[in-house]
Image (cartoon, rainbow, N blue to C red; front, top):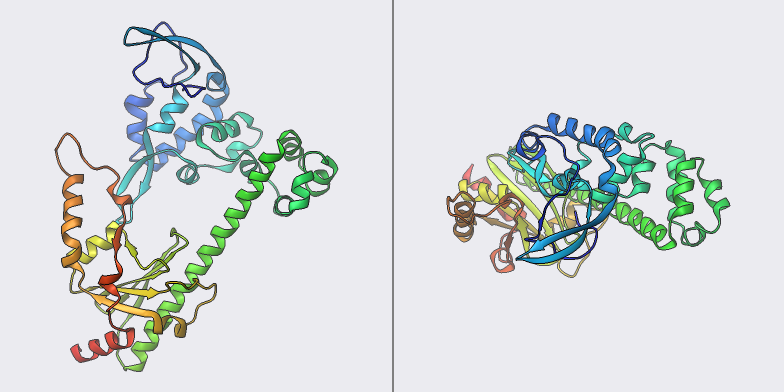
Amino acid sequence: MASDSIEIENVTVRNQSFGQIAFLTTELLNRCGNNKNLATRLLDFVLNVAAKEDQGWRESHVVNGNRSGKPVQMCLYGATWPFELKVRPWVPVTTEDEKPLALPANEANLRGLLNPSWLQNNPYGIDLLHRIFGFRQLTLMTENLEPEVESNLVKLLQDTTLVKSAVTNLDVVKAAVENPDVVRLLSEAEPDEIQKISEELGVQKQQTQMRERNRNFGLAAQAAIAKAIETYGLNLELVDRGYDYEVSPQEASASFEVGTYFLEVKATTTRDVRLTPQQAETACKYPDRFVLCVIDLYEKKIKKFWHADDVLPRAKIVANIRDELVEIYEGIDAFANSDNPVRLHNEKLLRYGVSTHLWENGISIDKWVKSLQTKA
C-alpha cells in the first residue's frame, strides 16, 4: 500500500480509515482459490464496481505510524483491497497433474478470468489492472479495437521512425488509428513509454514465433519416431500427448505414448534438460515405461522448420532414470507435505535438471525402436 520506497514492515498505524471489501481475506479469497467461476465473479465486481466506487486505491496520503516506539511517516493508499488481491493466493490454476492450485494474481493468470467487455468505457478498471497488476494500458485498450485498427496500431508501434515521432506528431497517430482513446493515450504518453510498448509488442511477437517453432519441433519428433517404427515393422500406437509451449528459448518439449511407453522428448541448447514435477513423478512411478529422448542442439539453434531427418541424428534415448531422480523427487515431496513449521510451497512450479552425463551416452531412436522389436 505504500506509495514510496520506505520500509513499512512492523509499522503500526492507528486511527486511519482504509477502503475494504467485506469478508475479502476471511472468506472470499479462500473460496475463489478453489473455484474459477467465483474468482471470475470477484474480478468482475472489482473492475466494474469496486474500482469506481472506492477510488482510495488511486490516491495516497501521509500517515503517521510507529515502529518499536519510534515514529514513522509514510504515504499510503486509501484502500487495502487491491493490495490484498495482489499478494494473497486466490486465482485458481490447474497444475500439470491436473490438481487445483491458488496463486497470487498477476497479468498472466488474470487473463484467464478477464472478459474484455468489462473494460469498455471503464477507465477505472483499466487503470486498476495497469497500476496494481502490471497490465499495459495500451494492450488492454487494443483488445476492444477492430482487427484492422489494431493491426494498423501494431504496425505503427513496430516502426522505429514512427515510434520516435508518435507523441510529437499526432497526425501520424490519427492516420493509423481511428480510436480517440488510443490517440489520447499515445498523445499523453512519454516517448520512453511508447518505446516500451513497442518493445513489449516485439516480445509478444517473439513468443508467438517460439510457440510455433516448438510445435513444429514436436511434429518433427513425432515423424522421426514414426519413421523408426515403420522401418522396423513394429505395430505400435503413437499417441501425441501435447506440446509444452511454456519453455525457455533454450528448450523445446513434446510428449508421446509409444505402445506402453511414455516418451518425453526434449530439445536443448544448454546440455541440461528440465523435467516438470509431473514428468519426474511418472519417471519414478513407472521406471520401466518412462523414456527420455534428448535432442542435442548444443551450439546449434532451434530451427523454425524441422523435419524427421533433423531429429534422428541428434537424438539420445535414456531409459529408466529413476535411480538418479528418485531421491531428490521424494525429498521434495516430503518437504512439501511435511507438518514441520517450515514447509515447501509451490513445488509444482519446480523443474528437475537432468545433466549431460546422464543422457549423452544414450542410444539412438533407431536402436531403441529395434530393442522394442526384440521384446515384442
